[in-house]
Amino acid sequence: MTYKFQLGLRPQWLLSGTPDTGDLPLQDVLALLAAIDATGNIAGACRACKLSYRHAWGILRRFEGIFGTSLLITRRRQGTQLSEFAQRLLWANRRIEARLMPTLDSMASELQEELERLLPQSAPHLRLHASHGFAVEALMQHMSDRGSGMELRYRTAIEALASLERRECDLAGFQVPSGEFEAPIMARYAAWLHPDEYLLIHLAVRNTGLFVQPGNPKRIDGMADLARPDVRFVNRQIGSSTRHLISVMLERAGVSISWVQGYETNEFTHMAIAAHIASGMADTGVGVETAARRFGLDFIPLVRERYFFAIRRSSLESPAMRDLLAIMRSPEYVNYVGQLVGYDATQTGSLQTLKEAFPDDRAAKAQAKG
Image 1: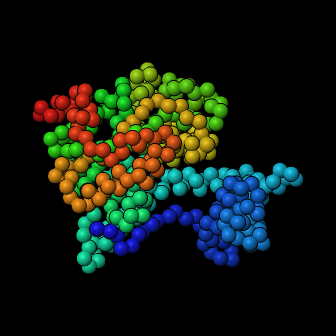
Image 2: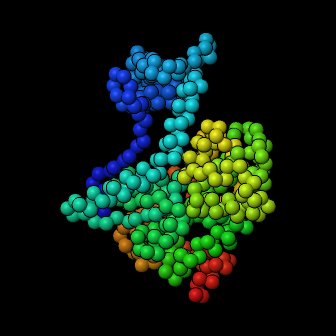
Image 3: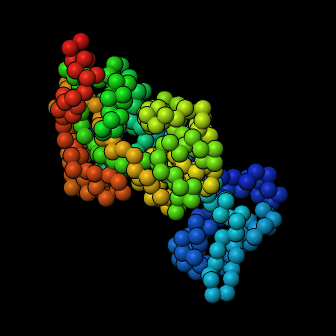
């Protein structure tokens, strides 16, 4: 069943109480500043934004008057640069988008399902509960391009698996690090992963590690450095699998969480972690490599994570699940995931039992005996 329409929600900045217009949207000036930052000159930014040179300068001058400070610095033979105020404005916008877009996408998907159910000849779609990730985001886009529908709600891995057990979703996303940290993470999932009832769809393998400023000025090499008083850390939200992995890695490194400056500072996505660090508000945080590279940060690899969707065996032969697997196995989707920095799509779309995916996992074996 396909969607008849596609809803989207986007964050918007407003300047409230301006004398001439009341609430004034900032999207035009933010888009123009981003284009200037990318192209290095006004002419290139005008082409990117499809604005006349005169209109672009009009936007800039208007907001310079409102803010009471320059937005651009023009130097002979050096092109045009953003002022410090404009740079901070643009970074704030990037942080807002990184933090809010997954929540807005999830809300838009939920609202779309509610409205679709009120239409004649509507049918239920697959329901995916999963933590935010680039392969998940890409899957939703590829399904939309194919005209297929799926309801997405961003949840922590534990919340997603609990929803699957309560039959509140059809697919639950969760990630597991390979190597020494696999056992403690799997033990956390064991209560919800029933080997006789569930199958796993392999989504991707991805690199997870520390984000640091370009050139790594603080010389951060691993988790032990988070105990240093000169290192500011930004964490993932309470309940997330990444936050739990961080606590396990700190314990293995002999570092108490009370020693980590910023441990209680939270962000909800990998991109929000990257934006937080890139804006200078922290020195390091943990996330997937793709986010670090998109914000121009250096990356220190720590673990390789496998990301799975857990499904009920009984749902495997449904038409909607077959359509989903066809999209996940399509060359277009596999190639896209494989081109994400730090991702491996070799097994994308493959089906596995829990025993096949985790042959040496004690938690899974204990659950199977129970």
